[in-house]
Amino acid sequence: MNEKTARAILLVKAIEEADQQQDVLTEDDRKFASRTARELAHWQAAESRNAATLPDFLYQRAEQLLKRLTARHKLFASVAQGHSGMWGASWLLPIVALLVGAMAERFGDPHRVDLLSFPLLGIIAWNMLAYLLILGWALAPSRRAGLRRAMANRMALGGAHVPRRLPHALAGGVLQFMVDWARLGARLNLARIARILHWSAAAFAIGAALSLYARGILSLYATGWESTFLNASQVHRLLSLVFTPAEKLFGLEGFTLDEVMGLQNWSDARFGNGARWVHLYSASLLLYVVVPRMVLGALAAARVIWLRQRFPLDLEQPYFHQLSVAAGGEPGMLRVLPYSLTVDEARSKGLDSVAQEMLGEQARVRLLPAAAYGSEAPPLEAGEGVTNAVLFGIAATPEQENHGVFLAALGRGKRLVALLDQSALAARTDAGRLSERVELWREFCILHGAEPMVVDLLAPEAMKGQPA
Image (cartoon, rainbow, N blue to C red; front, side, top):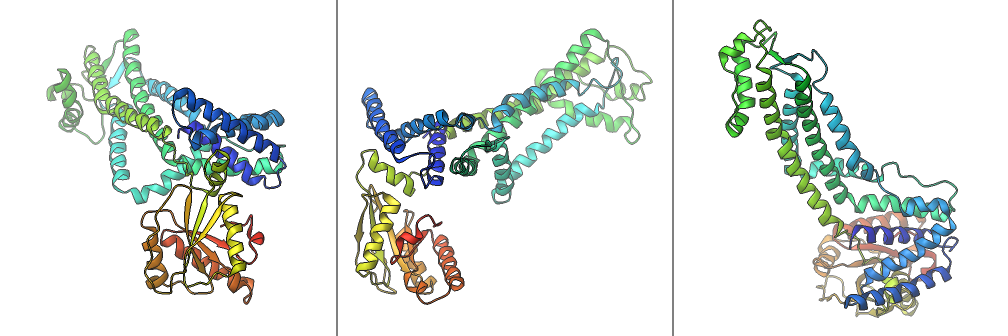
């Protein structure tokens, strides 16, 4: 799924989930969008001689609903078509960097150039440090993740905001979308940031080099140097360290020790060495900064393209399961395996309500025989439209050697939902202790790779709308 498709689908998802009372999108709006999307998806699939897919249906449906929202709420148009902070930065920052780089060496005497030019030596030194930092980030992913993800999220949101005077449900959906979009697009945004920074660094160095040549057309450079702490021999070694790769690669002539000594304190600052100095510095900038940064920027750009075509939108969420039936798919099935728990008739009806909330009104429940306490987990094969779930009663205390081993064996890389039934405990404990037990079970299930969902099988309606 590409980025454009994912963005439209995720925006509509956030709005529909926030609009539980259907104040913004009526039931007729949603049914019309589903019917139209199903027809368009099948028509386009027939045109391309491919089978219609759920992402095709979801995108067409999202487009229909976004058009309706835009027609009804003019301020919403900026959200539906909005660009992130990356959009402006991707072209503005390199241009600014080029101009700033062009000014880097323009402060000072236009006829004198310093062998120890701080701006140009600083450009090279800073980029060497940047390469070390990049290597450090790569070798320490656990330390970089939080900072880089926060930076990516901030830049992705940019100046985005929820327009005023939108209906409450619509504003809430837009706000939730902004949070979800920044989180899901973190890897893509990091690649965009890398591309922008690398190309901006290259543009800065290009600007500095072009400025040297442009000023040299109208001015005759005289070369010299002075230093409080360095002598001529040390300056020569420094220049040799910086310039030798460029001299070898491009066949340029460097400065000898005698020339460096003669140019100290500008005592023998001659006209004629300026062009050699400009060529050496420009070649060094090309070698140390422009080429590596352009290559790194190109790699980041390739990663951006790859990630844009493979946006990580999880279609296994209950919202998408419900819509898959409208797309023409089979009704979803919730396959439930109770663990050390007897499911009576009342709780069985509660499971029907849970399945309908998760997978749509036509969802079915397949209740498996209960697993005894301490028993081994039976095999649960994944299937299309089937959601596997294990049912726990949270009156029991989760144990690593029993419940933990059971969950780990059931999951094994597959999606597994843990239904945490609070009906038995809610009847005999206060809200505070119930909340503590729920949180204990939630953390336990997440630790063992299962998705926790708190339910009350004797009062499923009371749990609707509450966070899982």
